Image (cartoon, rainbow, N blue to C red):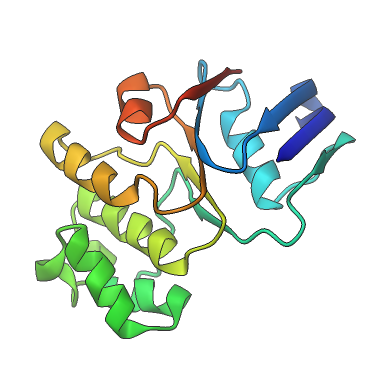
Amino acid sequence: MILLHDVSCAYDGKAVLQNLNLAFPQIGAVALTGPSGTGKTTLLKLLAGLITPVSGHVEGLNGKRVSMVFQEDRLLPWRTALENVALFCGDERLARETLVRLELSDALDKRPSELSGGMKRRVALARALCYGGDILLLDEPFKGLDDALKIRVAKQVKGAFPLTVLATHDMAEAGLLGAVQRVEL
């Protein structure tokens, strides 16, 4: 179990999370919801180990392998979709299979500048899936996808990791991933 004990985080002296106490299960999906600016992304970065709290502590992450899809796709512009994914998993065959599962078989050799926003998003998702791990952190993972594609992609993501933590403004998306626990920030 991952536990946050009186965790506070701040940016430029402005408090984002204050004295937050949370428990995340070992298995399942959790949706982080709330208006923009309430700390959803900050909490994901904290769980990813990208930031440390100004006070309090987090336990239960030691030895856990974390994969994350950021709000921005963060693709390498000089690499193809296939290269962007294979770089993170070290296995071109697995990278290709993952991209095909996310309906990107026609985009394997395209660079990010040649992809639509939804295609870039799926490459970012493929990268996280291919990397693998114990925890998948998703920050607005389905932006740029139409409703039908969102459903098909969510089926590929759902259950791929023991624990998925999703930051979203759309509870329907949380439902697609099977989120049974909701944390309002």
